[in-house]
Length: 465
Image (cartoon, rainbow, N blue to C red; front, side, top):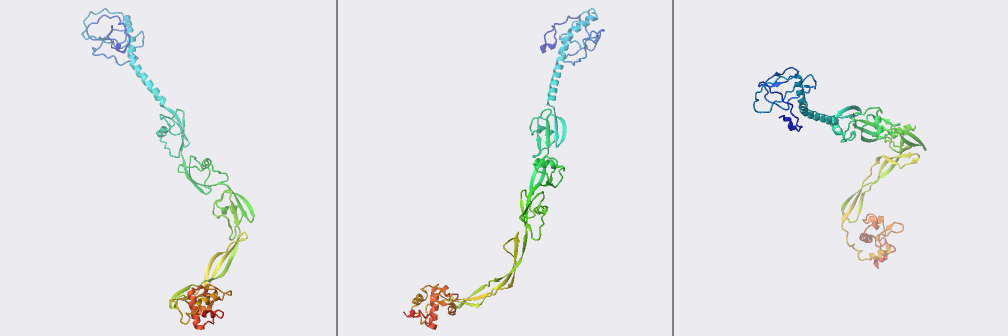
């Protein structure tokens, strides 16, 4: 049996070829691959079963032999000299070498075959991870190869930054397959003023017309602050849009319908062919924004001014006087009303008079202040010569005992029916019926001391019972 180390790979045992006659001691023989005689080279010092393999060393041709050297003997003892055998025919040598070549070749090809299989499998996996996708970024298309597993990885590898308002199709995180199409649409900020109302919107549209279409804005007959074909850059733009609206103008009893994209009510009235004259105005402010379906009434205004004179009440100043009894007032200087001239605006709207409006006023004459002195001296509890009389009976006869009584003519008043002149002559103030009952009795006693019972011709006898 052969001592070949390849037996450990599990290959089946192969019978050894017939042994050739032993060679003479000396250098190890080698084959040069040709039909000629053997040539000698340096002695063999070691043998590796995994020597480099040259696949082109033997082609199975009948004209040449393999250049692979035969494995050296595995014995550890030195070879025993043997007589040189007779040279064998060349054909016999080629047949002996051919008998051992297939087993040796298979053993040497096996490691290389494993390496080739591993590399082939890795290449297949490598090719399987590569994907051809079409990426469109804001309208710019390109086809590329990528190993990214999903849309997020693709955008990251390509350096495409996506904002919160940008639109990615399919959505980030979606798995990628070869042949997929990925689109990125950048959003643009638009500061839109639509029919007088301001909005902040984001859109992926790249022109004004496309943005209006996506936002659902009716552009037919509308006013646009910029052309519809204007491109919208990444920085966005400001856009003022006034859609066409229907407004009714009522003037002089007739209605006029107007289709307009005007910015103010005043412009709508002018488009309706109405001229405002003088103080004419409208039912809504002229600079307000006209709304769709709104009705605006034109107010025909006529008017003028009227001047009126009005009195100015005079003020009163009061001063205490300790020489006067309490409840006694004396007018030291009579007050005088002033005079004011007032201008009023008179206005008629559509034939209806409005309430006059005060425009201005000027003082023609200033009022004069009235000065009044009032007493602080305590009232006496009695009047000499009149205390013992029946004043209660007199009061019952004159007024029924009522301090605020007034006769039908309005001339006399109080418990004792004083006239105003007599009352003030006794030191009283105002009207007698407004004074306290005690003060009225005191004034009546004073009058009695001066004139007796004559002031009360019908009831004076009651004083004496």
